[in-house]
Image (cartoon, rainbow, N blue to C red; front, side, top):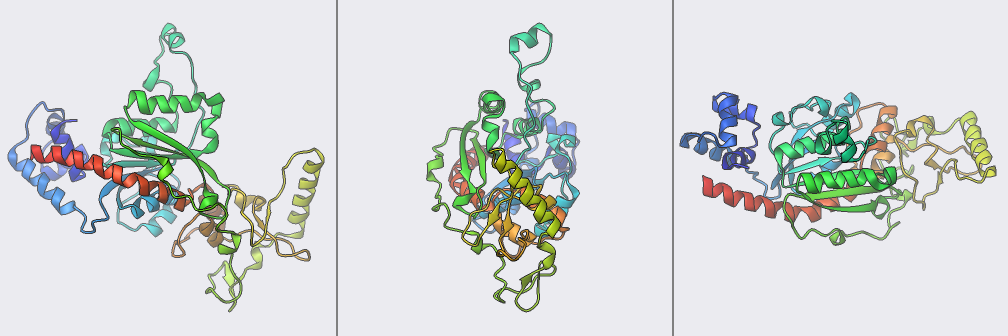
Length: 408
């Protein structure tokens, strides 16, 4: 990475943005980035002024990050809690965009499908975060591909998958660190070969040191939700997942996220109604649906498997909330007693179950809200990961800054 590229990164400009800001052609900018030409001293001074102006007033806001496959911003909330400042967001779903914008109104448009975005148009950043969807990897031996005259390595094994887009952005910007999230089964997919490809791409081909850990959200929220966390750093740092503070599993139970229905919270139309803020009857299962779920569970019990609904009490830990929750709510049904049909969670309860604050806005329909929270990360898990990443991110930024000062 050239000194000018480091300078541009700190100023927060992509090459096209720098060209517009500085009044030069993109060709000039790229020649300066490559080191083919040296920019004038006035350009260096202008960028240094811009860096100072962008320096956060709050000392806690000490690194920049991009939020890819952003969903409704769970990873963003985690990174902001650790002092990060989001400089770019990509999310293709228009309903998720609506919820994101309602909660992060920073006057920056949300980019759509990451596959359509040139990496050079993404602002420079210190950290990349992504809850990337896992699509199957097609893996074949390099020797066979050579024999067939086909590409291999970085240019083939991940082409056509969304993980490729994470790789190409990492390759272009070389941020100090990244935080990736995926389902637990990523580690065992295709007998472990998929995960080996991912690790090899990040370590051997991009040069990052990586650390992985499967974490159950039940340490933080009343939900059994295991996810694999992949943390990477551009240089070797003494990062250790064992520094994570994991509260005792089950220290929070469903009673902590369910509506109390006793007047202790204000009603939130249309989830709760009346002076006691009782849950609306619309969330109670119909007799037909409840009978179907009971018959379905009985049929599978007779076959010796565990398919069926999940009934929770106030002292329960729930199953994993999924994006299909809107269909029948079967994985998490709230028991209302023998004489009454159970009910679904309200979207507000789903938000709490995923660790979102009470002031998190839900501007979409129930169907879309259930999908969004089912696809989200459990925020407190990643807030804790971001917390232990922070000192190592800052140490790498400091090294960059020292190099920058020598150049300026």
